[in-house]
Amino acid sequence: MSTKMTDTTPATPKPTGIKKLNLGGIAQKSEKSGKEYPVLPDPDGQIAQLVEAITDHSRQVEALEGALNVEKAELTALAKQFYFDACRGKTAIPSSVSARAGSTEVLVTFQNRYKATNDDEAISRLLGDAAAQYFRQSFELRINGDEIPEAEAESLIGELQELFARHNAGAALSAKAIIKPTKEFHTARHAAFAPDQNLAIDKIVPVIAMVKTKLGKGGE
Amino acid sequence: MQVVPITFPARPVNGGGLELAPPKRGEWSAEPKLNGWRVLVHAPTMTAFNRHGGWLSIAGEFAAGLRTLRGIGECHEIDWFDCEGLERRHGIGRGTLMVLDAVIPGAYRDRRPHLVTAIGEPLPIDIQPPHESVSLVPSFPMAGAADIYARLRKLNQLWRAPFYEGVVMKRTDSSYPIQLRSPHANYPLWQKHRFLN
Image (cartoon, rainbow over all chains, first blue to last red; front, top):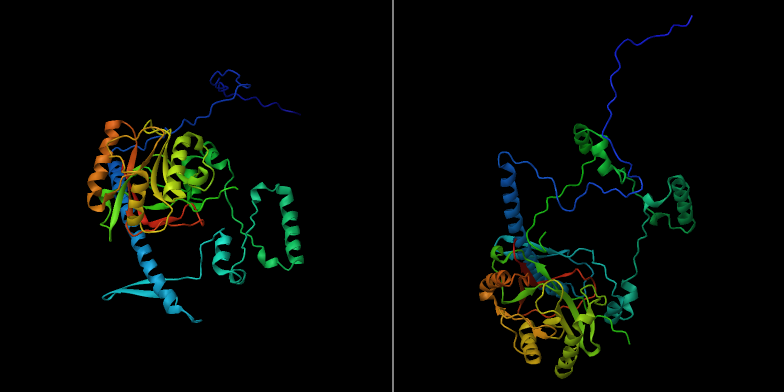
């Protein structure tokens, strides 16, 4: 025997929703509106205090950093001359030069790290045949995994490893895998998740937040 | 023959606002920092490069100035001028090349008189440079830098134009750094102090 169940609760009227015109064929404007940002509420003046403190301190840091850069560059230039003179002809060389003011010491360290250049002509001009002995082209090829079709990624990486192994260059290939949000996540998260969920997600994958100060053109 | 830049234009270290900057060691000069386009000029061929070493796309706007610099360069044996091109950002001195320096041997204190001889005395800071001309940027001893900085700021207000951006300080013993390593490399013997907002 089949029994037909009858729902006796009155039906909740379905919201009719906001009446919308069909704008299918017209490109719709996004909600983005230039540089109009929502303003952080400041009921007790705490935000304004922080803004003033950050701006003042940033200006001081900028000025101090500028002065420090100049002073360090001057000391380095003076130390460099001494370093090359003192190391002349030696094969065991010190890593640093000590600069002193009474009991205060500053080290000028010369690491085995060099800034890259593309000006190989200048190097050849200076060093002649020795240029090839001490300088060589260094390169790094990068693969953007995001641009590889997902279905092809595994076989492509496998083939790449085989290719490098065949040329005895397996060590040249390195990989770094990370988990990162999709391109859409940054905007979609606000529609897809509640603020509590977003704060919880932020503990695992923090959004990169920068405090930008407007110190004047060219300021950081 | 295609000309390639001899160097990237020297890029001063950012020193923040002058009013907050600690005192400088050594002897420095102050020049107004102008709001324009950095232009490196090869005078013999009238070729203009931007600060990245590429062709200057608006070189045509400085045709008159480039011709003038070719003549000056020939007479005074200067091939490379480091300039600020005034154009578009405000209405002052349109098409004018303000000479900031020259890529010639010697310290700033020696290059500067050579430039004054070649180009002529600079205009006072409160005189707007004429359009489509060549002019040497003024230079002041370090002791007057704070006053100049304040006056430049007032002139911007008076002219209602962001013509001056601050000052560029140059160590008087600084040579012009020639380097093709990077257009972003800072030159620590020059320091810029922009106006704070």
